[in-house]
Amino acid sequence: MSSVLQPVQGMSDIAAPEVRLWQRIERLAREVLARYGFEELRTPVVEFEALFTRSIGETTDVVQKEMYVFEKGGRRLALRPEGTAGVMRHAAGQGAQETDGARWFYIGPMFRSERPQAGRKRQFHQCGVECLEPPAPLVDAEILALQVDLLRAWGLGDCEVRLNTRGAGGDHARVAEGLRAALAPRAADLCEDCRRRISENVLRVLDCKNEGCRGIVAALPPVAEFMAPESRTYLERVAAHLDALRVAYRIDPLLVRGLDYYEHTVWEIASTALGAQNAVAGGGRYRMELGGRELVGVGFAIGLERVVGVLQNLGRDAALLAPLPPLVWLVGLGEEAQGRNLALMQALRAEGVACRMAPGGSMKSQMRAANKSGAAWAVIRGDDELAQGVAALKNMASGEQETLPVERLVARLSGR
Ligand code: HAM
Image (tube, rainbow, N blue to C red):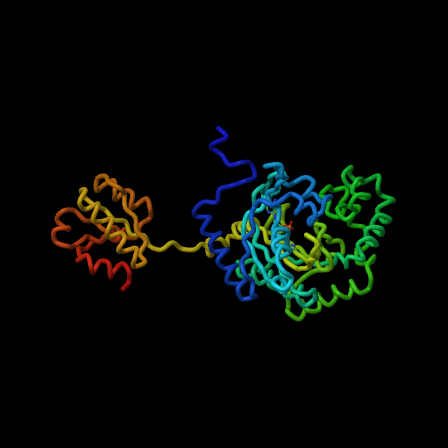
């Protein structure tokens, strides 16, 4: 097929009726997020490449393998692979007073040049939040509870939450050293990438997808074993808050997440209704330095394609589809009636009625168009009806038809 007729591999159109599911998901998200005091922040899709390399980490898969990078006007730019960095760039550009305690959410497209497969796209959409309140286990628990609330609002209350800690910044070197020592005896059995990762960024061995590496990783000691007692206590306090809120979770002692900015609490949420790519969402507490300002926050992002996938796989999508308002189709016989129908259509729309018409054609072809559109009503006028100030109103489902004055027709259709 010609390349102008298809979207780029791994990127899709989202058309009706599925797009109505997306609209409902987004509307429900906005309702839930407002209850938690979050405001929307829309950041650009294109940012300087350095923003992502600096915050996400030079040796992460996202930065090394998956970013869409291009040069324009001598600048290295990138399509955003995730939302946290852009939101923190926005925060860094403002005074601490304005951004301390900020709660922002975003809904939009992200780009990662991964090998496309079921549930893995090159353009995908995230609904995410970032909260810049002072670090505390209580905040982490509240944000995780928000995420579970959001999933429940969409009908995904049965996902599994895995929770762990990356420890404070001061723990990171000790954790890396501990993991290197634990991996050393098996280094020869790791994949080529992981042998490199041992010295470059050993945490990345823990999320290698290679089967052989996963077997070796499963036998590693919990990363928290290498951390200071305060870091373990921090996680215990998050867990205690979650218990009190009755948010179910499972401690996964080897969960570290694939982005370098995390410290302390991290989590991932998965659904058994998805195949290999079963992560619906991920989040955690993070620290990054941008433009000389240190920013700490906690947040998460939910993959909306995955949410839609779970709803479809479980047959829960139809219940969420936003219904369309009943459509009225105006049929005009002759040029005069067509012109007057255009004005009537605007009057009906002003009363909140959804209407359409065909720009011409026979009665038969106009009625065919009305049928095809799924219209609930047809309003039919020719010269006779115009002369008498009436119109025929046809119920498309029952076929019943009556003639009534135009003012009464408007009142009837608008429910006045
Ligand atoms: P992430 O785990 O990289 O985290 O992505 C979050 C979610 O985005 C994943 O759980 C998945 O549902 C979805 N996702 C990621 N890649 C793809 C893809 N190629 N195709 C379809 N869906 C995908 C982040 O992005 C962090 N910024 C989350 C965060 C916010 N942490 C703190 N604040």
